[in-house]
Picture 1 (tube, rainbow, N blue to C red):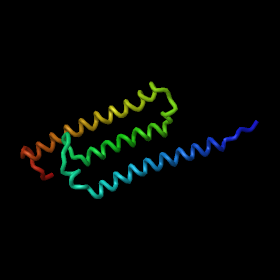
Picture 2 (cartoon, helix red, strand yellow):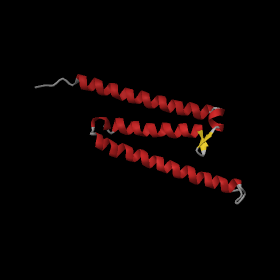
Picture 3 (cartoon, rainbow, N blue to C red):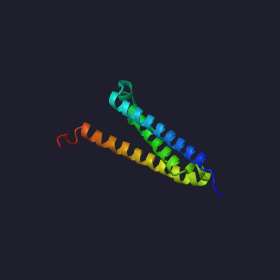
Picture 4 (tube, helix red, strand yellow):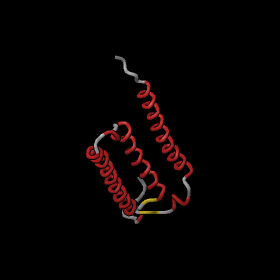
Amino acid sequence: MATDTTHNKSSATKRIWEVFIILSVLTIVEVILGIIKPEFLVETDFAITSLLNWIFIILTIFKAYYITWAFMHMEHESAGLRRTVVWTGVFLICYLIAILLIEGDYIHDVYTNGYISWDF
């Protein structure tokens, strides 16, 4: 008996285009913000870095989450597996970002306060 696969194929194609459009829009927003660099976002600091950097960090984490959700088919898995795979990665990325911001701020302070010169 032959089965009709047109419905599955069209819904899969629709899903691929949906994911493509969402990721494209997020990337276009990042590129436009990176080119324009609005002054109020660059000059306003929040938790060690500018708001523009936080926007980039949040959009990047969201894109990584969405890529995992869509391309690893996490939407069809049980809640426990989804949490294990997705949230572990999100927490590790957040931890890495915190370490980079803290250490980067320390190194910037060392160079700014004159303990080491900037000529390298």
